[in-house]
Image 1 (tube, rainbow, N blue to C red):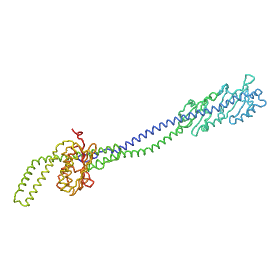
Image 2 (image 1 turned 120 degrees about the horizontal axis):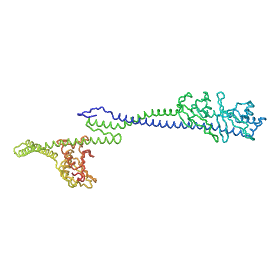
Image 3 (image 1 turned 30 degrees about the vertical axis):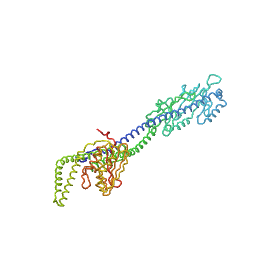
Length: 601
């Protein structure tokens, strides 16, 4: 809003409440988005690292279990090949004692071995847990086995071959002769991979696939999902052997999947058994692996949806709380400018806004005082100009009128009516002369001459000067001079004029037989004087105007006495105020400082 030629003109400005609302909403939402985004990125990164760590740990754990199972079987093969009963191969197990021993082992390790057989050097099965295999020849195995399992000082050949679509692993360990340096044959153990499948099935989940690749990249064991797809003995994952020891994303088209996360762990051996060269894979679709991340994203989205209305509510509340006192201050200002009256100042809002309101109110009061002082000064200037004219132009004819009236009053043959008219002339010229004197006093007040004085003595002198008028008016005067030290620096003649003006105003307004009370009190810095009466009092709405020049309510008054009083008190750097007396009349209270040197210059 701007003020132009007394009118308020609206400008195209954005309301402060809207500005604050947009600012707080922007700050809160931007902060919320940034914090939520940062938290999500950090949480997703941490969650992905945890997923990779768990996948790596899982792959290493499964590889360790596979190594342990193989260690147990290789260890059994080595230990059994060195038993004395194996020497029965030299007599071709004539009494079948070795076959019975192998059968008991097979039964004792049910579910571990498919069969246990002893093969002579001529590739003839002499003993077996499966009686149908005894005395049957077998094809010669390659001199270079598929793989080797090294256990301490033993070298166990490991063959992987296909039986239909199912891989079969056989362990071959030589049987040394106890009497010569030759080998009697081999102990062959066909492994049952059901235990391996159980480890893979139990180690995975519905969204994971586990696989074991041999050193040639052949898929020799897998969890149920891959087995059901017929991928055993295939090499579709052969290239993934290179991922051993890592967790990475790969294209899952070989498994008819989209992108997958692959964690690979190489065989590290177990106990005294050297690594087999196998690789264990843990495979999981990326979408499934990152499902917790996606779930977390939904949580953050829901949280953001909650934050938005909360931010809106907070922005509304904060903008209202800040804007309300400013709006109230604006309304206060508009009311003052429009009605030229001061409504109660706003008291709500923060400390700064209240201080701003109080400062603005003080500014308005200062402006009002300045305006009043300007008006008073203007009036006094007018009085001064009028006084100069009146002193020159009016007093001379007034003197002539008074002298003429006095001369006429000495004539002998004047009627009673003429004498009465001459009395009117004399009284009215006296009244006009007093008016001119009062106007001259207020327009050209003499400078105050400060000197130590006792206010109690000044008060007693002033009341003594009016004692005759008080007796004539049947007025009771009460003095309650309770100031312990009534000494001040003042111009005692001017203070006497103040007291006479206040006492004369009281005498003229109170009814016959009224009361006037004068009281004093003091403190370390000042002395206070109160003049109270039991007259009709002064209306509260008029109390701020009684010290204005030419303001009066009494018949025959000119409104200059209290203006002179205020001028004198101000010249003494004191304060004067008007209130209601305890008896309902008027009470004038003025305070004078003890010393004037602080104000000199």
